[in-house]
Image 1 (cartoon, rainbow, N blue to C red):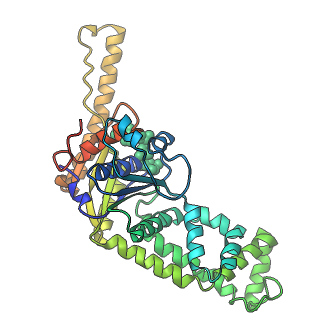
Image 2 (image 1 turned 135 degrees about the vertical axis):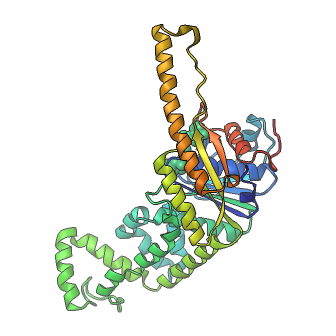
Image 3 (image 1 turned 90 degrees about the vertical axis):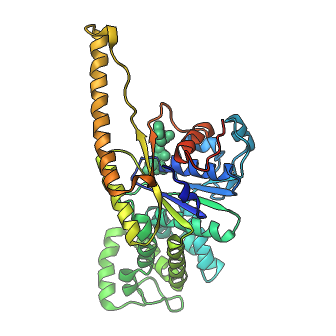
Length: 368
Ligand SMILES: Nc1ncnc2c1ncn2[C@@H]1O[C@H](COP(=O)(O)OP(=O)(O)OP(=O)(O)O)[C@@H](O)[C@H]1O
Ligand SMILES: [Mg+2]
């Protein structure tokens, strides 16, 4: 059991339910690629502080920077061509605006717009879309043999697939565009180029959300006019890239009922979207508890130990059921198991331990 085939392509996308270990697994896969000599970049999303430190991600620059050789040395590993970055959703969105705005002035007035500032951080799907956007940009830069993308925690793990579509349909502003006929030459205020029904409606809206907010909203859509096509084409190209054979999806899951449901749904949706499934990582599996009470049976400590052992066993049985369910749906040669480790995975040496388990028995070089 190994995820070897996930590395056959050039892009690995780690997806899965919230909190299961996507960021950890992304970093471990990237590290493996780099240690095999491939020029690699990992795009992480909200890494835990200690992991960020371990990867040398101190500044939020939205650009890849090399993981220092000393970090590898400290973990007893040879230096490897690994770059890492933390995705900054807002800056990625701003870059897109700069790319597609008709002029620099227009780009700036969009970026300064308060409505834009609110949606570019908070709009549902923005994070997912910007991760895919960054992937596209890095791919076309052509500097990397391997790009590993972490995905944000979402209620629906598939959100990142629909994100490009949702994004463009929002920006097309079906509802708002109806109100805003393309702004013809300046005009007196927000309400100028609108039909009467819209004006009546907007007067009500204005009372509710305030005139300033409304004006920002109207300005935003007026300034965005003409950028829709660019955004739409770009989103389509991103989607195409996700479907190519060079892109492999790795699903990360932990052995709980809810996570397993979500992951199975994700795997089947990937198939129906014609995406290439690179394998499943089942993370944080409890090992068998070996703390037998022995001579202490009958003493308070011994009884407590026996009780803990029993509770532990229950957790394990529940996890066992989850694993069986996964087995019945996903061929087990496509997945790997990682135990619950007794410390956070927050340095290169424990990332290497995870990589070793993910790629055990395959091309993984014995490194210790
Ligand atoms: N096998 C493991 N054993 C012990 N701790 C682990 C293991 N895998 C991950 N962790 C720890 O669990 C925490 C969550 O992991 P991680 O951040 O990778 O999850 P995530 O899926 O990216 O979460 P989110 O959905 O919030 O982005 C981290 O502190 C990480 O160090
Ligand atoms: Mg994460």
